[in-house]
Image (cartoon, rainbow, N blue to C red; front, side, top):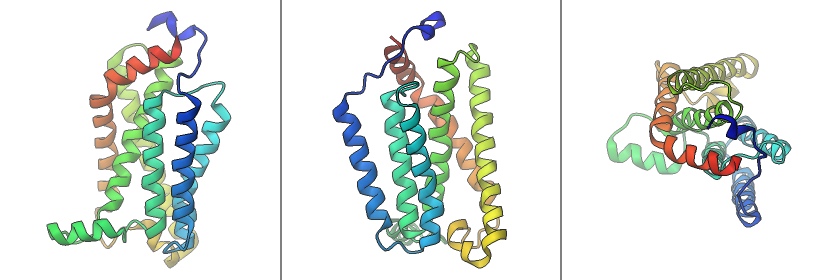
Length: 214
């Protein structure tokens, strides 16, 4: 894209779509907050979605994102808020799926960690491209994957700190369900999500970035 990045930027997302985005976000947030399974878990899990909303609102004029990225951020927020409602270990749909496939645990948390790599990969890629941090595609992908792994590792540290501070009440937030390799598999799924994001979304992401910049 070269010097095109330096052109004046504007969003091509119509106001109607913005209102729809906000409508879905707040509808799921309110539903999630009504009699959640565990109030502390709700705060810990829904908190990142609310923080993300505030950051996007703050940067909406100075650095609007592509419609593709807004969509995936919203979907990630929904995943977080569903987990906040039931706790990751007790999402009803995945209880049923566990019975069908004879799984020993509820694996909804693995969906969350896959998204924890998939969506941040798009965020990191969009920032690196539009800020012209690195131009070579191979190095850019390497940096994106490194950022996603670092983010996933930091989240595992947050879970550890929460366990130390809160004690047994943090069990619902941790959602390990007795799985000894839970931390490693969480990070592995985040890496897989980031790789899938780079492989599947690259062409459409590039197209929307070019359109947004112009």
